[in-house]
Each structure stands twice: as structure tokens, then as C-alpha cells.
Image (cartoon, rainbow, N blue to C red; front, side):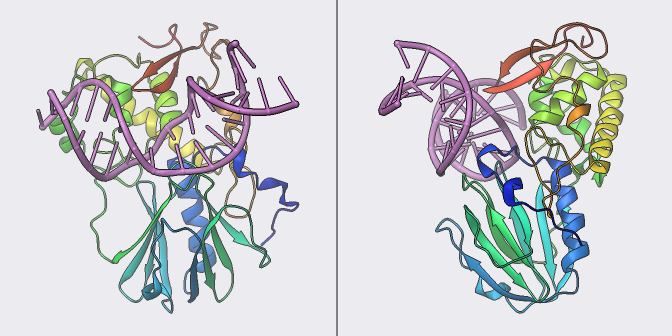
Length: 273
DNA sequence: AGAACCGCCTGCTTGC
DNA sequence: TGCAAGCAGGCGGTTC
């Protein structure tokens, strides 16, 4: 296990939010690191996070992702749920040093894991193991019939629907923009205006975009880092997000930015109809 | 039910 | 240079 020095990788002030893929990356790394390990102590440094004394002493059965939630299942029939929201990060610590913005520290018998979160949006909860998994996660299980029944006919813009957690688990702004670009669909179109074929394209492009990003350990727009401080490698693959005014890599049009529900949407008017 | 909006947060960027 | 306002956004909540 190599750890990245120097600590300049830890720069919470400039962090990008972890999206679905970043969470997936963290869960895989955590599973490899702490499966079968005992949680010796749990220290909370943030008044917004409940003290969770019942969690200590348990042995990790596995670490998995549910939407954007990191789920640690313990042998005590409890599960620790960590949602990183906007600026949360998890780091394995090689030393015992206290980092800035630490909200929670998990001490296992082989490593310490810190939750770092400058903006304090992250949430931590302890629940009984066995909560049913989400049925709207494009990578782990997507109920297409349920989606068409409940959401495909909505009048909301398709971009808004992609980011609606009731319709799709864990698709954030970056990937919502990228998926629609790959699918060639204009973000402002009402969801109800998409044909079944266009929805099919959205689903297949979404899986492709997400899987590509997973293989590259997430998207580092500025400085997202994985559990061990290594950067992701997907930033060069973004076609539209954050590229307002620049040339589209596909059609040589100019990437545009509009506001939808208060969020920036990037798209290429040339590629997306 | 769904659409639109708000609040939670803090630090960086922008404008005067 | 300094300060205030604007901005970033996942997601649960509220209102209409």
C-alpha cells in the first residue's frame, strides 16, 4: 500500500464534490482495506454528527455503495452510512496526524480513516443492517419499468430529472451534463418529449460514461483524491462540463452554459438536439 | 403528484 | 487592499 506524500494533496478548499464514481472508488478501496477489521474507536469532531458509541467493537463484513452513500456493514447487524455530499472526503491515514476539517475519525485495528469535510454537509448515521437497496442505480440495479411508469412522463427538463434522486441514484451535475452530451440530447427538453429510443441512448451512454470514470478512479476536475490520496484520471475525458466557451471536441461547436434550477448546465448546441 | 424553491455550509472568486 | 456579495451544489424539506 503506497501512500502519496506530500500532504499537498489534501487541499479541501479546492475540492470537487465526489460523484457516484468517486464514491464507488472509495467503497472498493475501503472494502479492500478494512473488510474483516475491527473498529476500535470512533471519534466525532463535529457537533452536527451524532456520537455513535454502538458502532465500536464491530468487525467490518464489507463496504459497499448504495447510490452515493458509503455503507459499512458490521457483524453487529449495524451499518454505518456515510454520505459525502459536496465536500466530504475519506482518507486512510498513514500516521496519526490531525488534518484540517476532520469531522470523524474511525480507528480500525489496521488503519485510521478520516472524514474530512470543510463545508460540513456530509452525514453519518448508524442503522440496522438490511435496508433494501435502491432500485434506481444505473450500475447496480435499475428498474426500467418503474422508471417509465413514474418518471419518464414528467414535464421537468431531462437534465433536472437526471439529477433527481428519486429518478436516478447519485448522478451529479458533472455526469448529468456529460451523459446528455454523449446521448445527443438538449438538456432543457422536457423528459416527456424523449422517445423510448432516446431513453435507451441515455441509459447506455450513462453506463458507458460511469464505467469509464470508474476505471479511472473518478474525475479530478481540480483535485479529487481517492482513499490513498491519488488523483483520478478522468478529467481529460470531460466533453462539456466546465468548458463554457471552448470548442466542442466532437462537432467543433462552442460549449454553452445555462442555469437550470440554480445549477450550471453545460452542453453543446451543435451535438445536442 | 409534481414543480419550484429553500436551507444547510464554508471558502473561493468577483466586483466595487 | 479590503470587504461584501455571489457562487458552488446533493438532497431533504416545504409550499403551492
